[in-house]
Length: 196
Image 1 (spheres, rainbow, N blue to C red):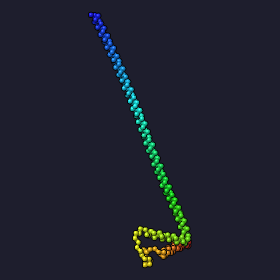
Image 2: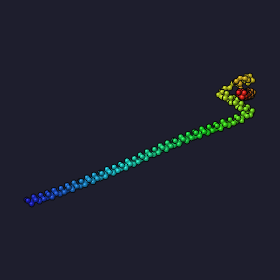
Image 3: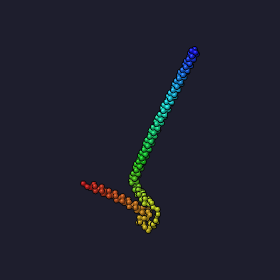
Image 4: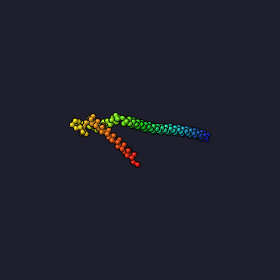
């Protein structure tokens, strides 16, 4: 019985050693598997973190590019507005200068024409006739209805139609006014010379 017991104890020791060995192996395998899983999880975490960092970097770069593009577009728009406003101001100034020059030239031409006309009796009469024509035109502006008055009946009325006789009389009266004015100027000049 001792041999049997010894065999049984030995067998139990072998079984225990085998079980402990398997348990140790299983614990080692479990530790290896857990470490592998942890390493894989850490790798996935690092990979996700790298992807998130790359995505953030791309997003920041895209936002910076859009901001710079918007700034460039705003600056270009501001420059276009300034250039357009400057061009409009230059055009207005150029137009104003041209109009001023045209008025100056027209005034100079009118002054020269008036000077030349005033040197001849015919020119003086033409100038008086133009004044009379302008007066008739301006007096008839806005007239909607006309009342006919026989000129032979009412020659001296202010409402009578103008005639060549009336024009001749008025021109003669106006030319006398010019002569009287010249005589008055000459007398004034003579009296100024007489004063001590």
